[in-house]
Image (cartoon, rainbow, N blue to C red; front, side, top):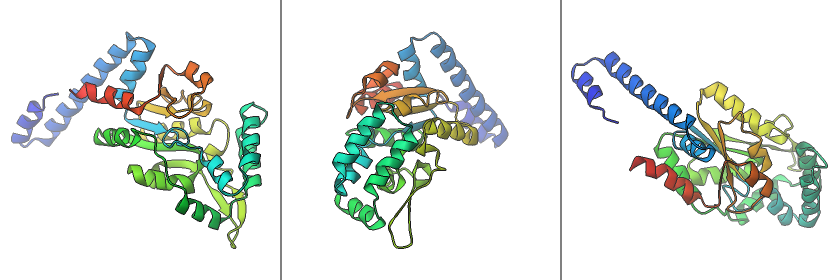
Length: 267
């Protein structure tokens, strides 16, 4: 996009004219993009939405990182097999997300000191390509959020590695008694219950006015958040879930595909 009109206006010392011309150029490009999307195939449409997104929300477990945080924490606390069985039962649809979360945490009952030890000893396994993807999005001015059914205390170090501010994390909060023993989790967090990711997305759009919000993840809770998300991209680089793959208009197994889609537009 040429900026010559704006430069000319700047030379005329007319900031109002600069703003009007800049806004007009942006509105024109946006309108052209919307027209283009209307005649595209479903996969082409989601790709175009991603290229022009103003906000991208990532799931964390098995998406941004290779592992499932609650399973790894359970192993660390010596409760891996019990939690694994319960997770399988929950995946079968026999209980709500919040019920499954409560039952698994009641088994693990992690203390504050165990969480600290876990963070100090268990390395973060970022999914290949995610750092470059987040960097590319940031350079384009796209707001990036982490929206997870996992635990905020485990996700904050991941966000720090990716340059994502703590305010852009939506996840569950563990509660502890004054002596550091496990006391439960904050049931008021939207991510602690079914449909919570969709609620987070809706709030983000209402509060910040995002027009093209994309959610990326490996699970059904991510797919269910679109709508209100404007598009869902399924990710199978760590775990392939057939039901999610069927529901995704665009399904990728390598973040490089998303990076390539972004950078092709700028060349």
